[in-house]
Image (tube, rainbow, N blue to C red):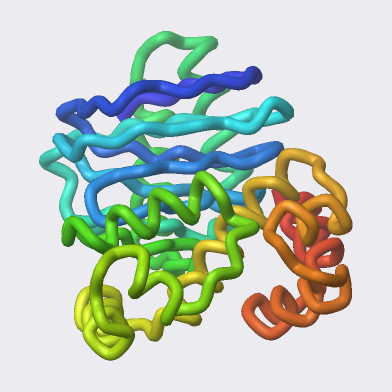
Length: 243
């Protein structure tokens, strides 16, 4: 296991490495793209990327992240990308481990003991709903990428079906079959992921509502609260506090 801390904006091209990686957001947010979709990492959470999986990370301009690398022979961690809701104790322990690694430059018995506790806790962490599935099916990949580029596009599923030369019924069935969600729920999940990215970067609720194409701030707040259990400002404040 090794660890590092970074305090700046960066975006790496698609790459892979032998060891698994936990990207933990201490401040700001991280967007991870890997096979199968997008994962958002707000403060207080981390995205787990298994070893040898191609991925890329984008850190918001105000971001501060901590990277935890885990040897591939460690057992019990997910074999797929997922966002983990980290407890304050785990966050503190990982930051403490980073300090020890910088000070000692080696894994002594004390450092190894802390690492084992962290791994045990990570195996128990709850998977958070910050994932947007992006199937490798060409039509859905096209729609997802266009919505990411223009999240304020409020076209209906019927309009999208016309754009991709498909019947509305066929498109609806395709989305459900490949994502497990209805088209409306799939697009809403994208909006949640993008909203968390923008809010974590310091954007106002008003500007995020506008960027996502909502006619009113209250409509955006209602959608966010229904999906995440809290209004956006409170949600980000609580996540930042836990981090």
